[in-house]
Amino acid sequence: MEKGDGDETCEMPENPYDIYDSPGTIQDAHSYGARVRLSELEKGTVIETQENSDPPPEEQTWWSKEELLEHLKDNPFGADGDDDISSFRDKIDSGRMTCLQEEGVWKRTIRQSTGLGVVEKCAVLFHYNAYLEGTDEPFDSSVLRGKPFLNRMDQGFMIPGLYIGLMSMKEGEKAEILIAPPYGFGELGCPPRIPGDSYLLYIVEVLKIFPEGSIQDYDLMTAEELAKIPFEKIMDECNRQRISGNTYFKNDKHREAGNKYQKAITFLEKYFYKSSEQQKQGHDLLGKLYPNMAAVYLKLRKPRSAMVVCRKAINLDPKNLKALYNYGRAKYQNGNYDEAKEYYDKCIEIQPNNISVIEQLRKIEKKKQEDEIASRELYEKIGRKFF
Picture (cartoon, rainbow, N blue to C red):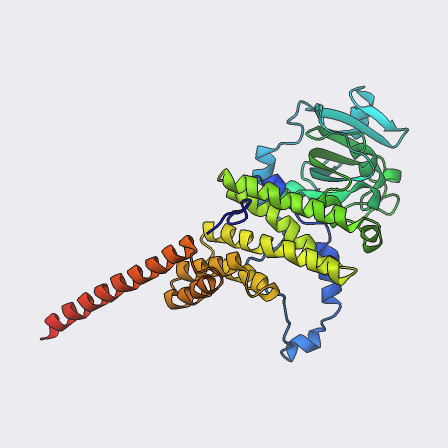
């Protein structure tokens, strides 16, 4: 099979910080719940869900006591050299915290960094633990959820004090951010977890900063903001993700490659095209990304998932050679040899002298012969036992 510029194969990311979702899950869950009544569920309402061969693990909002104790053992409060945690005022008066906002926000750097600085028009991926005064258990923690938080700084999805603190940080930096009530949850708080007039302490680690114009930045934009971005620029960024994935794959970093492909696929699948020409360009790029993602799943020994993305490519173009080829590989890996042959035969119709496809057809014939011999020997053995 011709490899072109590396668009034949791929696998998913080992770096946990390179996997994330935009912070919209809770809102989506509430809007979904509003559409389903308990009375309907009692009568046996059928709920349709999108086909997803590999659904992400359900996000855990709360954690068990055992998980919490284990987390505190590995990440004790004050483990970065600050042993006195009884009073937030003591932290301020100690002189070790820098005032970022008068009588409102203070910061102590735990780990310095010379990386890229946070700016208003960027997306930031960060981990945090959030504490109330006098407690050693976080009231909120992305670390315990096992999922860093992704936020675009100009979208206003966080309390003012945390925003001010993050705006003073750099990629790779870790810091304590102490927040007074007016810059936190105010007089009312957020019952039952956060009482009114509460001081808050966030321990924040900035994992990655995505500059304006990156695909992560686009993914967090509103429809109105996206409409202002030239389509060519968006396509360039999605194509850059594909090429980056190809490089990872050639170096046997299959998980990282798959992550790059999936970012571009997810974005292009939900992008609103303004013309048939734009849609054609988007679909052409998806026609390259889907077979690559299928190869990722094949490396992961997930043939059914590979079939799902191959079907998407074939729906766009029934003569997508790489999609048909990888569909055949997925069928073979799943033990469906006759069905695999059907897809390889379709490849031969498109490209009769394709060496990779011919080799796969030989493998199928050999496998079927081996199975036939094994089956005959088994029946002969059973026959000798009875006669």
